[in-house]
Amino acid sequence: MFEKTGIPSKEMVMEKFPTIDRINQGPVVVVECYKEIPCNPCQTACKFDAIYIGEDINSIPKVKNENCSGCAICLSKCPGLAIMVIDGSKSDETVQIRIPYELLPLPKEGDVVKGLSREGEHITNVKILKVLNPKSFDRTPVITFEVDRNYMYDIRNIKMEVQS
Ligand code: SF4
Ligand code: SF4
Image 1: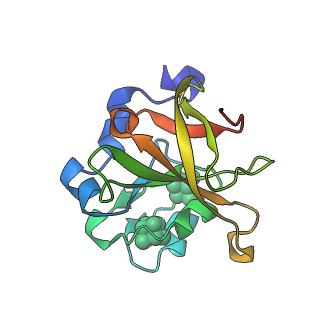
Image 2 (image 1 turned 60 degrees about the vertical axis):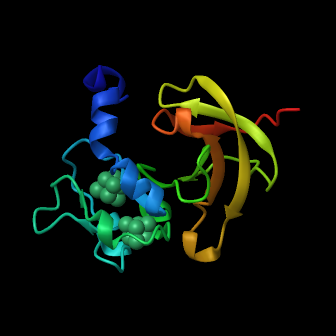
């Protein structure tokens, strides 16, 4: 399926996620880069050496979860919008997820919007907690939203239709 659609299988996704213990410790990056391509801004953006590509720029990035602070700088630098941050330390019922989001209009803090799967299907609604859009992010804002833990491995995007 991936070769035809570009949509990873659940198994491929799960291989990119850190353990639930690490997620519950605090924010940590998930790098969904599945193909060997000549690209490395994620590695150069990370000041904590949490992403490693190495000398062969075609290599798939490896993540050192223990080094990641969840700062989200790499999210705004990845041209493929392939990186997100997940944080399970705030609640037993929900997780916080940060994604790059380049569409307009941007959501606002407190909005409840559609949460989409990797296939683009509406799977639940999510609450927007924060919108970061500093100049240094170069027009790739980073959105933080809260979602039920049941959807933490499935949700990957939002759709700006504010839910009542
Ligand atoms: S979130 Fe921050 S610390 Fe973690 S990999 Fe990205 S740039 Fe590095
Ligand atoms: S910047 Fe993004 S697309 Fe490029 S190697 Fe890193 S994760 Fe993959």
